[in-house]
Length: 262
Image 1 (cartoon, helix red, strand yellow):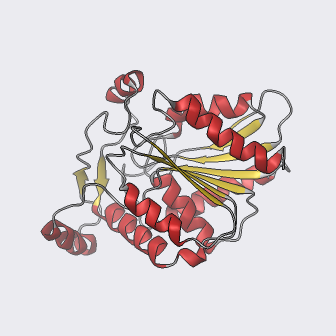
Image 2 (image 1 turned 90 degrees about the vertical axis):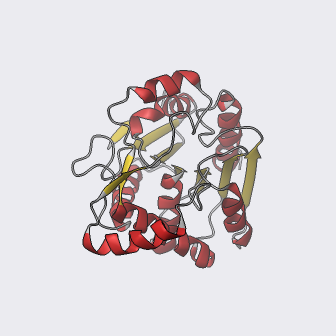
């Protein structure tokens, strides 16, 4: 876990949760933007990813992620400032599940292309076989088959990802089954999501997460304040796309409206 301090007086703390296979180091640009605009940032690597210990792409339970995020939020509380949660892709799903089962002092939530469904699902036979493997060989790992560059059109970042030793492209059977279970629970129990201001930023040309599943979940939420913004032509990683400054300004306006101007 790391804490990046705002440049000047801070008015909020952003707790940032990265997606599957990646790590907190990929969020340098976004962290800098929040710091420049009056927000401390708390971030780290989820279990089985980045610089953490253990088998890459493996968790015993999705609760491993939830416990980690709660630690980060508790660290953010020490600043005595409003807390904003930010989660990308699987990180977004982690936040959804965390907030469904834990009462936390959160002022608002930003989800970037949250993993609530996949564009390319495994064949039905493999899906059923994975349930059996989960019982007898949960640490068995498979390639994600997500081609480099599928997440963003940002050529500079794609070049970095290609040689990034911390970028993990294999996941375990247990990880996949836990991801599936978490997505299913999120869709089945949307009423468990707390009444907290929510901003969902979704790539319109997402080739990893199924945007229709994201919108279906969003539409079923009964919370008082929610905003869904789909960015035409943008890939999965909306905060890494060539248009990322526009995306950030939209998110910043949401935060400032809630905490500064509101």
